[in-house]
Image (cartoon, chains in turn blue, purple):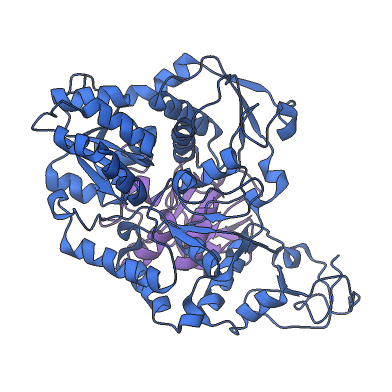
Length: 466
Length: 135
């Protein structure tokens, strides 16, 4: 039972009332879809009515009433709909929002949707908290050579203009935890991009659900998000316990391990805890593992015993009572097997998903330096715009371009009309060191193959997979 | 004789249509050719089949966040399923359904929904009541 101060509550079973005027309680309101009216303090008793309720503060109620403008009214209505499906009781303030919105996903409809907000008064349309963006779908400095059209570029231009008018910071990155402002332990955030969410939850100890573009936008406008899922302690406890026999070597192996665990976990609502990792992984290793785990399993959080901040011991995450599931060499081999193709001609080598850190850029540049790729094999590297600038200054971009490759800034390959650019360039066999990207691109008409960074570059030189 | 399945309260309008069922997972980005309106991922259990105007019945969501925008984009072009039923949705699918005003429900009381409904069944989905009726 909620003790409520002031005017509150929706319709409920008539005749059952509770106290009003509890001075220590914040003012709350309860929203019921399609029937929102303040009554004086009846409290519902039917389970389905309880499910339908969400407590709102006076500020949230003002947004819902339209007193904070139409953008925030849309935003909080959207959040209440989603919160209701996941039994959120109230909203939680968030410190940042991060929006995935590439033009392929948005389409004309999504861009027009954003432009509606951009046309509103400035006070109504400005986001309430720092809000940043995931990779773009078109590198506006290099799209025609990829086979992207002016129509695609114009969608991108319109979307960027709309975002900027809302005060959104165009970071265009899926590695904001390495480049912008990493969240801190216990920090509630509203992040999009599954790789961003799983890293931030697991490695930083932040609290975020997967927030798709519309919900990240809603969080940016309201400064809060429904309190469900990973915002709650009970959903952060381990539900599956995996033991690793041998530690991964190299980024690709970390990705393969993440993919195997993600596939075994297999649901957004499962939380793997991993034992057997003795060496502290690097940020890039955790990045590849998390991105692959989220891609294969829709997994938003993992723990590593003695490594990640919420899991100093197995008991911290309730793992002791769980049955141990061993990750075997056979598990890893089964995952790799469809992405073999040794000796086959390779059309395009891609480093992306996630975007490369400055350290990865240096490694690629060092491997490329003094060599030339095969004339029939394209070679693309995707990184954040901020990393691109640093890589330019350090000469990494030059080394990659002297090799014959191209560094794209602020994009990620699978988010940039992968089907269309594949067809335009006749690319079928794609090679990458990203376990995530080879999982995605099968549906886009590619025959994806997986290899280490070193083997990818050797293959680009040979024109076939070494 | 009609059979009623109880599920969690969902999102979107009441709809009626023909079921297309698989014990497989779902991502609009990973699995669909959204221009042609078919499942395009060769490994998917519904590969090659049209999802247009169907009541999709699947296990759970997978992969990334793009589906949240993509359901909206699919709806705008008019090539879209009428509803998606899951054993368990994830946050992205729910968020996408909310923006697209697409019917979506999950968590069925009688067990695995991919075995409770058969492909070809005529099904009515009532998200606000948390029920699905098989005619």
